[in-house]
Figure 1: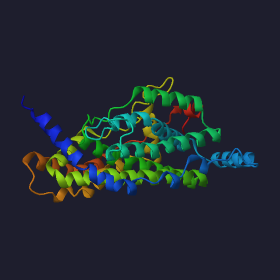
Figure 2 (figure 1 turned 90 degrees about the vertical axis):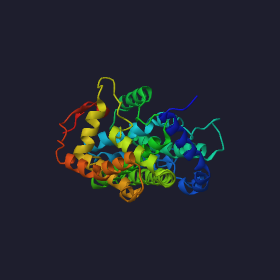
Figure 3 (figure 1 turned 45 degrees about the vertical axis):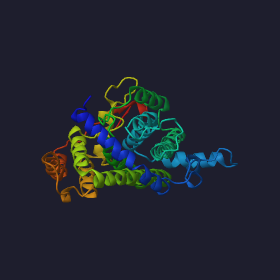
Figure 4 (figure 1 turned 30 degrees about the vertical axis):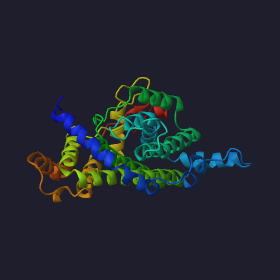
Length: 335
């Protein structure tokens, strides 16, 4: 039976991904850090086995007392996003050609997926423990939010297409890096040097992961430019859905809207950042310079080359979120 156009496209992209397996295998050691050389959450938290554990804990709580509520809200939202990692690993493992066939496969794509997950897993662990020790956050409300988010899942609108998937992760890893770096800056401004260090380390991981996914897509652009650019345009038209878009707590169904409003208001992650990421990816993959494209691919090229400027214009019209109450901080209103 003859394949339809969608099936032909899927088969073609699958073959490109499989052809990249050797390249990924060569790059893994530079894109992932050896476990024994990696930081771990306990490196940055009070050592409860030490003789002076109570003094260490008191110092953390004293520093954290200076953090404004709006920064705490964004930090919790970022932590909740990181804690939904099981959903993200499941999604990554569904991408055609990237699947870990056995659960412990030695294939390069499978090793990348597990290695990426293992590095990401530390982020939620560290932020969760830090927030718990501060005593400033209602951890039960946070835990309810995490359980809801994992239970509800998320649909990044990538189907099982590895091209769409790697465009999504290239964008999302950069967005996460920006958010953590900006939280780090605001923490330092508030005098919390340890949180500044923590968020800086997490941002460093996200930067490495961003580099990896952008590299994968760069190779795809070399091998299959017409389909790669069409996939890029498709993903941008669908818009990048943030991983925590379905988060809620015990009572608030659209909690993400409130959380993202605070992130916008504090400048931690904004529409202008979204525009800058689009611009970065267009430049990274040399979209304006691609030649010999089909009509459909050329239309995608035209669309992508002006997209960042359109989001910049939109950013000028975005209104700042009104104050709201958050269960995460015991129902206090973010002023």
